[in-house]
Amino acid sequence: MTYTVAVSGASGYAGGEILRLLADHPDIEIRTVTAHSNAGQPLVDHQPHLRSLAHLTLQDTTPQILSGHDIVFLALPHGQSGQYTDALGDAPLVIDAGADHRLTSQSAWDAFYGGNFHEAWTYGVPELLVDGVKQREHLRGATRIAAPGCNASTVSLSLAPGVAAGVIDPSDIVAVLAVGPSGAGKSLKTNLLASEIIGSANPYAVGGTHRHIPEIRQALAAAILSGPSAGADDIRISFTPVIVPMSRGILATSSAPIVDGATDEQIRAAWESAYGDETFVQLLPEGHFPRTADVLGANTALIGLAIDRAANRVTVVTAVDNLVKGTAGAAIQSMNIALGLPEDRALSVNGVAP
Image (cartoon, rainbow, N blue to C red; front, side):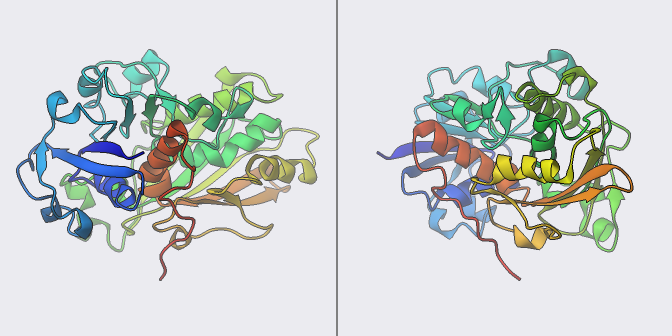
């Protein structure tokens, strides 16, 4: 069966990456691409690397144009998807790459985003532990999927195994991330100009203000409920992202205290058990740590684990391509699961080098 697809926000980074991956999907026909200010222009004027889609023209983003497809992808700025999802009730499958349907807590939404709150959809990170099973079990047959925030899913995948196994204490999490500016979208911003970021590293959303914090807490709370730990309300995280001069990529260094009595063998076994059978989340051998260069263009999250007994903490270093495993790849992986297709269809574990 071939599924027809519409992609909104097709002139942006996330929309372009969704299209790049879908272009090689044998079960997908990309029929419609939409934008706002760029409507009426050829897609390749904004995504010149997508040569196989040169025949497509950007149309207006309206519910009428998006409807009538088997699958609709929304790659819009945060706070803009809800106005369309409300009007797409008849669409068989809708996948939102924005934040509008990620959070279950309205108070968290009001505190970190503001504007209209919309109900949470099935979260699109298949490898996460949720309610005692992997999230992919909740994705099977789903009709509404919220693709994750790239920083949030990276930190959540980093720490969820240890939280679920009860070997780390989630009340004192520290995460510092080196991130590429493509995660901030394609809109012109002075602080993201090449002259501003080349040769520099710039922290932002410092001091507990980043919008992905409640998403991480929500994911880790679900992991706690699936394991022997208790106290989801006690999850505390110091989260600091730093923009570095690479167009793509996240390198997340996350740490948490070791729970009294947890042995080195138990700690490593928690991550091995969680990801030993996974294709797209891979734990590296002991003493090995990933680089962002190793995951560019791939739908992989590579994880290195260190046990620091002097500090009594576990440190997890995780690398992802923010536009693939962090966004578009996670969305398409979740789509495949929802439709009953092979989970890895149109997705690769192989990156691009150099």
